[in-house]
Length: 77
Image 1 (tube, rainbow, N blue to C red):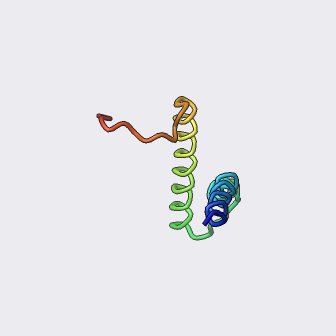
Image 2 (image 1 turned 90 degrees about the horizontal axis):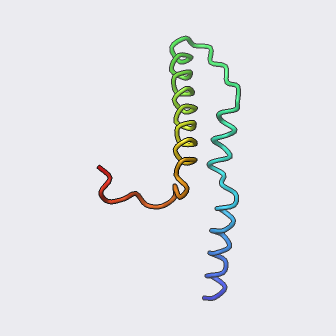
């Protein structure tokens, strides 16, 4: 039991330190992708632009809030 708890805690700590989703998102934004079909190209550029804008918005909003990981307030209207 004690060993299982230690392993689970170590796994959580390791996954928090190595956030693969965040790393993959950064690499995806930096990747140069060439889309040849006109309709798909426009759609891809639009999606890419939205992704970058949402990332910039989340970076600025988290910078203004010192504790951005806390739960939102119940009365947030």
